[in-house]
Image (tube, rainbow, N blue to C red; front, side, top):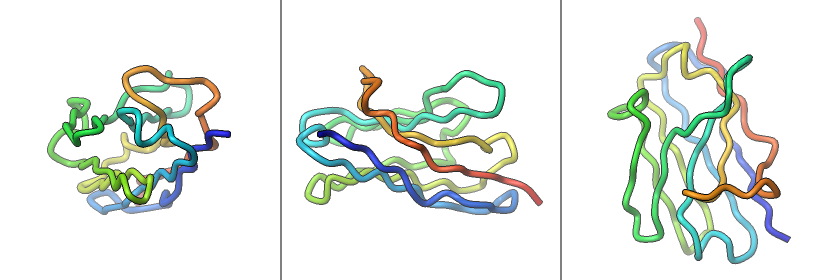
Length: 116
């Protein structure tokens, strides 16, 4: 059974940093591009960043230059380094495959709160 588990969220002040992790089970990680997504209260879930099997990356304009996505294929783990965090980055962050998401892969997410 495929499972994606997000971790690393927390409360941080504006301008601070966090590093999120997405641990994957099964073969999904080695066969797919992966992505980070987020959902703020009262808003639709949105794309944040993606990374191909070959580590080609893409970012939403709102996080470009501040966030860095990476993956360790040997560890079946993906990361999101978030710097210069803003209050508008507050959301629950999820990982899933990219570009196609699978409903069964959505996990609990990890809460990121940016506040002074």
